Length: 369
Image (cartoon, rainbow, N blue to C red; front, side, top):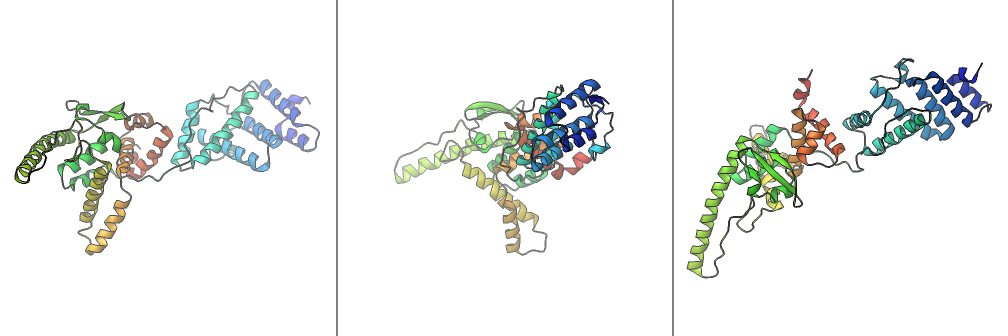
């Protein structure tokens, strides 16, 4: 029997009996593959496991083996690698295949640390195969999630709009809806100038740290609110100046004219709205929304207030962005489209919201089947 006739079981036995060393096994594995002229999934996986036995401790070997096995099971839709037929060849994997697998892990709530371990396992696997002549994907530069993974709080689209309807002022209603529909961050909203708005096309240029970042989009309804708000604010500024003038004439002092700011949102005391004002507007409006929803239930006022406060405690301006990402996924936008629309740098962070979208909009995903 020639060396090329040796199977993996024979190699394992010879290795355990000390009749072969690990260099011999590696050499024989390479010869077997070269003679076959094809890479078969199960055969190459078994050879990889043999390689691990030679090189690593039991815990490390077990981790690498399990992770690579899960990758192959996912790619080939198999419950177990044993279910894959012996004659199934190893395909030419791409970076997209690896990224698709990482997305699968994210959706199934694997931690960033776990995904890094999967990446390292696949690096070991493809590095080993490359020594045998297999041209595998280059995955070192594939981004993976960072260590921190904050809790996501998001609301359905109709709930956001329901909250906005309980605003006590037109400004607060517009603040919530404009920020939500355009996907703006709070500072981007603060820095938004009226000249950035294209009313005809219902778009707004969004700047981040003074640099143009992306285009935001808003509905006809929000367009009407914008026109109404700008008109009403100009009239209010005139009223404020008249009152100031009368007060100065009656009591003396210095007259300070309030000038209409270039920024979309301003206050009587500042040319730009503050974060605390935005935060309070959202919190107060959300509280009124939930309080009114509980009005028809058999609760006393204090109980209703307590429940409403608990619901509002997790809501902030980032909730609007979380909710927008989930909504975009629910209408069929891709990861890349959501990333572009929301101005996100890390696509792995964006992919977390696909899971949230499935929870918030089950009917959207169910309708696909």
